[in-house]
Length: 307
Image 1 (cartoon, helix red, strand yellow):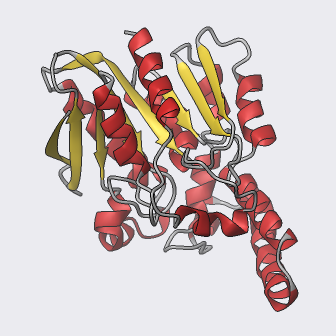
Image 2 (cartoon, helix red, strand yellow):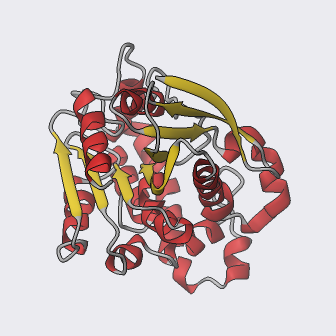
């Protein structure tokens, strides 16, 4: 395995890592794209570093990767200042994935026709859109959802309330009810109204309105590029029935769609006994966790088989 420091983008330069197999040339490659929130290049969540695990594992199996700090991790304040009320997933996530692909295409060690995008969580939701807009060779969806993001958020919140008690449950139900009411009204908001309705983290409801206008289903139904959908059976942040099975329904007539379900694995494909979203953070804090080797092996075999 070889690792080389790289920089993604110019206006918002991001530190990153190109990870290559030790020997050979014209490698297939994968661009790793973060989930929601601000994340470093390893997509570190407390004790887990899923992108580091995947990058190092794929390199040993003949596949190169690029991973990089998320734009809001490095330039969060500046990005919010520059875009103010109208920031979308394009400025937050999609542009940098495409910049990473363009960097790979210029590297003589990479096969320019075999560059895939692999999105985790929110990145998985966006992966079909990135494949279309960035002309990637195919799509890898890791713990993603084809639904609108607010639907997944409402499910998580309702599950949290169901497992809460007393004052926390009472206060939470009031706040969540207000948020749900706004979610229901997103499609009726004008762009201006959405831009002037605050959400969290400096974003507005326009962030979600723009995302909802470009649903994953549309991209998946109108593309014949290969798709790999991967899901942990114990994932408490996306749903086996509403998300993983929904991808199967959407892609039922697709010429090259592969589905992988992993018993005993959670949202970042590590082993878990957890079954409650309220305990997800505690689960990420357990030391010694790594992405299960079978997941990395399946990605590598899928990519190489399409070379």
